[in-house]
Length: 213
Image (cartoon, rainbow, N blue to C red; front, side, top):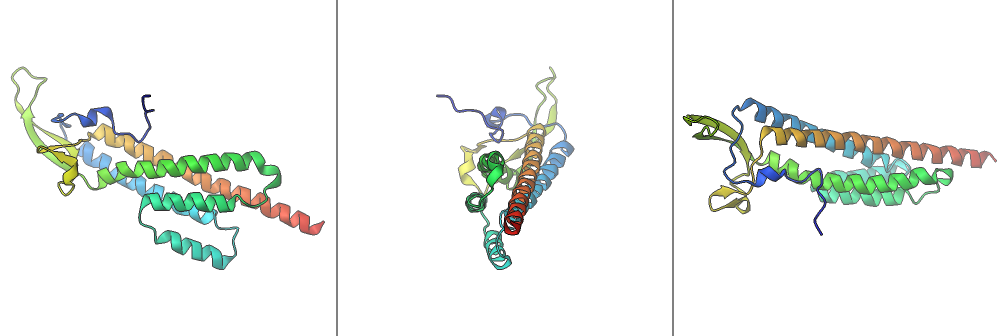
């Protein structure tokens, strides 16, 4: 069965060896800056979600959990932490919010998986380098030499290079797609954090009502 294409997959063209790069350097450097900045937005949203999932706890316990979260450096570990925190958060009694709780649980699973998967693209951008290559202009019959630019894997990652050729290269337009993917993930995680806050508010209000009865 053919694997379903996912948003964070490498573009199919990036696997072509000796693929000609962009003809200008500004687009690729601009795209890189935009993408890495957008990923920091993702990290901020992840932190917001972590805090939102612990606000129901006593202050001391919440601080202890957040301190533990902040010591995690690997994206997969942070994603697993959020999933576990979400499970603990959802063990509470949300009563009439059953559909909202079910949706939140599904979205949390989906977005933490996306967070871990998108990290692979972020790492390739952050640890790659832009190369300048001189090659013929294949669109011109006279084939004058032109300079082209593409993002390649770091030479420190020998597993990304085969027979002196890189495993992949990215063009500016592909990096821009990653930047947009990071921004979209940022927005979804922020909404998830807000939804956690709304669920907790509903639970807190119900507890107040119960205590007054």
